[in-house]
Length: 325
Image (cartoon, rainbow, N blue to C red; front, side):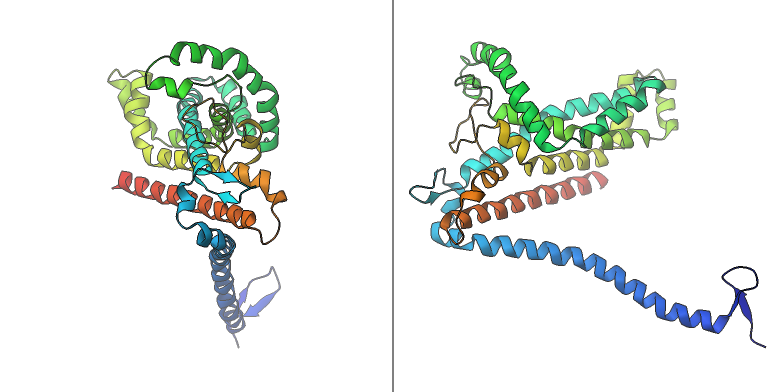
């Protein structure tokens, strides 16, 4: 008589040998599906890289490496360079991180250490809802609300106070147009704030209570506990959160397109209009004929943006690894 095992309820039995046979077939199929799922991501990523590189190769062959540090972008003379867009992408993203980082630290500290329990959930949900707002809504809000406020109340005082200082004045020179690098950076800061804040809150909540209670027990203040216990404990995850926010800012398109000014010229001023890689592609891709030098230049810009994002990711891995070591 064959031994049996109950696998599907009372009164329903199946021979062990048959169950083993089914598992012997299902397990390799399951493992194969897992392998296929993992390799699909690599194949898809490789195809995207290859298509961008192939599409932008004619522009690179025509202009050479000068394409990377040429500031001219003139569709009339078909003279294209990526320097203005690379500068605008990196500059606006750095501004966003500089603005968002202290705000994220403050919100995370308030939610984890200071806020009453009745306020933590509403404020936490409100911060998370910021991530659900479409980027085009941020762009419209920035164009109709932030740009006029910057032009009337923010940029003129900064120009009067800081514009005359040697060196520093270069950052605050020019007419108060409202749009520009600083405005784009502020909009991006609001957009990446919920991502950084959410990870900061999770990191701070994972700090063992015993560590914080021990610090409070020897007379440490809330600020000292936050600075010397909570932040050092979660600094690895915090570095990852900041780099995640930076990567999010690098590729943002519509919100930046509304407020950056979309001028393909290089300027050191925070108030000067500029352009990013994503905004340039969004503005000029519909007007680029198939097979034209302009289209290949835009595809090459897309490949450069991918390379910049990859460098940011690699740098974050290096920083996280150094913190772990």
